[in-house]
Amino acid sequence: MRKRLFQILGFLVSTLGWVFVSCTMAMDYWRVSQIGGQGGSFIIKVAWYWSNLWKDCFIDSTAVVNCRDYSVLWSVTPYIQGVRGLLMIGLGLGFVGAILAFVGMECTYIGGSEKIKDKILFAGAVFHFIGGVSDISGYCLYINRIARTAFNPNLDPTSLRYDIGTPLFLGLVGAFLILVGAVFYVVTVFRVIFPETKVVYTYSSRSCATPRNRSKSLYTGYYRSSRQSRMSRQSRKSMESSLSKSSDLSKISQITAEEISDRDAFV
View 1 (tube, rainbow, N blue to C red):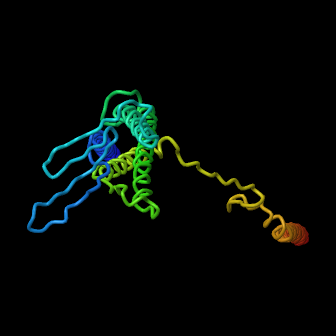
View 2: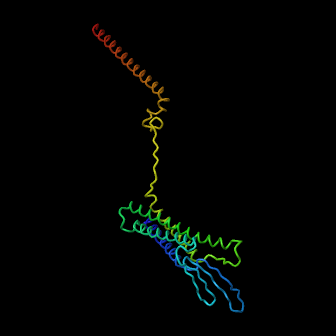
View 3: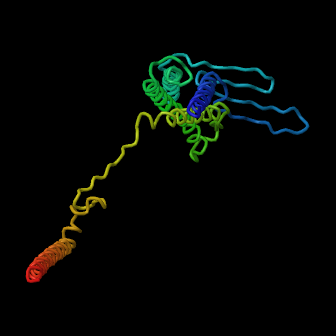
């Protein structure tokens, strides 16, 4: 029951993480920059510049939006291409991992025997983990680009300094949930796939012996041999003494019988 509960929890958490990552691909305001906004009693004039993976946009105080879409694939900035590729690779691996996890869960009745289902679930967890790492790499690459521009002291004053937008935070949370779901999967099947190896210690009969077999141990062989010989000699002496006593008694009985018979004859 606990195994099934952890697997369902891992599936829900990882699926929620992939939903977050998928939403960030289409969201705006990956990076945001603001100009103006110093208010007073007059009309506030402010402009926002923001970008995502597909376009650059400008919004003024009248809420008019002007955007420039990235025209062709090979004319986009290289780091944008890298972020796109990492996120798409992560989504593809996550899709395969979700299918494998669904087949390998204990609460589903497809996939074969229990051991085969555990192996399938472990493979799904590996796909989730690699996909989550790929997504984190993409977000970190984009954040690094923003940070390098924002904290560059030699930047031209007329250039824009962007801030990190909401989709990046949401994507990092989603990637973290994906990794947590993969950990839940692995916890439920790790002991089944990789069982503990039992170490068996063997002892020779001479080094360790039970009380019933003490005669075969080094202890008895060294310390009790003289004692046993003494006991055997004592038993032999006792047997010899008993035999001598019995012979003496037989002699006495014979003598007394002869004396009595002679006396009776004399009488």
